[in-house]
Length: 141
Image (cartoon, one colour):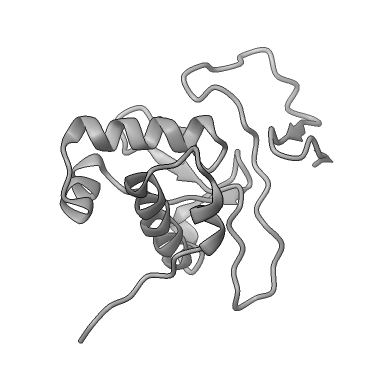
């Protein structure tokens, strides 16, 4: 049985991305469809679903080197296609701010676009404003 992934034609129009980055994003986007069906892939702090896609898996799927995959992940993060959250003693989580589930007619996910390597210990947990770097929308929750 053949398996196919969707490729967003809009990715082709973004000249900042090379074909490796476009295909990697398509793989991440495809895996997100599975994640949203499983509650264990929901991050309550980010209030959103995430994907786990190891560097080794992406090396195999793209057929490229480790450095290429690492650079692809960095490029996708810089341009706002993914948000990487490193987890202590766990796999890196990838949030996809542009993801929307075609089956549920949902809107694109909105998550904080901050530096995943820093932790803010002085945050007010009663009310947190989440701002995306994409459209500057503030959401109070």
